[in-house]
Image 1 (cartoon, rainbow, N blue to C red):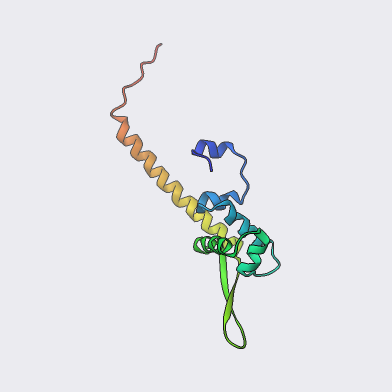
Image 2 (image 1 turned 90 degrees about the horizontal axis):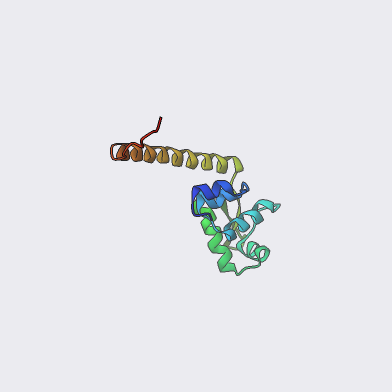
Length: 133
């Protein structure tokens, strides 16, 4: 992840990079999300772990981060004889995109307020730069 906004703007970014940027996700989280997005159906944690070639516990932690951000949804499947398991699938892309747009709008508004506070705080303290005519 770049250290500054200027660095981020100079980088070539893919749309999946928004997941990292807006939600603070790790590369592994992006990989898990990609596996779910490319799957023909919902997957268990074990199936995800197999596809990313990681331990089940590692895949589970990543899936939990994705659930917490709303990028992935979980469904409980009940066995006829009792017991259950969970499967995971990506959230609706339009809902995810709308959520990312809301986050960006909130961030933009907050940054705008901070810029105005900066302007107000320092406009009286700055010495004017003499202009040679």
